[in-house]
Length: 382
Image 1 (tube, helix red, strand yellow):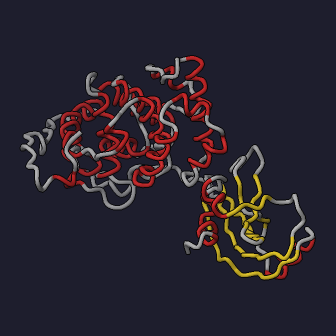
Image 2 (cartoon, rainbow, N blue to C red):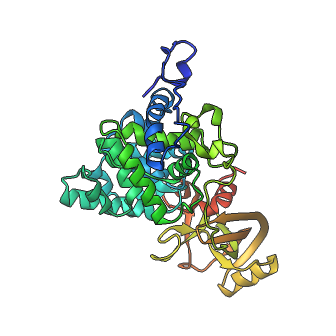
Image 3 (cartoon, rainbow, N blue to C red):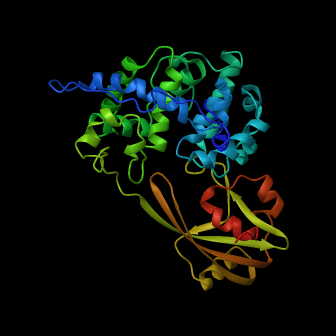
């Protein structure tokens, strides 16, 4: 796994004769795509051996830990995942514990990571594993793909990292790296393009180094051939075979077809306080942010007078109203533009909302990250 980066000054790593390994391409006949992928393998493996980051799930790559980390890492940065992963492992250390956890507690553990169906699918998959696979993750790429929430990439990652099965794990990082190496202008969002790259990688993958091969590609994409900003070609183990670099195409690769613009929704969020309690409501069981708790909110942007009128229709009387600022949250297909009001109530009819203490808001009720600005305000953090 390499040494701890913090110890490098005190520990002289032996010189790696392959650190600067460069691949010589025949001048009279350029590599085919398959040959180019095969040619990048030795420098990739050598680089990964000495540059792999120290990560908790890499230090103990048991199947359960690899699975949880891969699901958490979808749409989320590595540094943001670390504390969530450690907390999750402490409370739900194995498949059996995950299969039995109450959904509300599971969602609270997931709070802030977003895409909550990922957490629900974890529990569904854990229950299937308990019933069908003896409480273990199956050691088969095809069986892994049958489980809820596990697609081709995640199945490949688990199979290769945890079981060293030689199957590719192609995510956005890998698609970017391979597109640049091949100078491919094809749309990486097309399944046909992804399948072709998977085929190249499967053919080139060393049968006994599947874990290092896949993680090396992912690491190269995360740390060197980065998604935002200039790629660090001077540090890249694949520089000598990269056609995109050679042809000056790195600014235009990878190519993605433009997405449809997201729908924008304006909402007014009400932080209704009654004594030392704050109002929450539970979202519907289906749809966006299903079964999570939220601060009461309504469509549109209301003025302070509109807020008073809205509350009056519910039989409530506001003692004091204070603007709580604006916030914006982006989902996959919709964008919320929010305006908040902090409202101190004189009274409120019982039963319409759940009034909870601030400590319960922190520890018990899962509230989506869309409301993080207002949670911090209520908790005195901003």
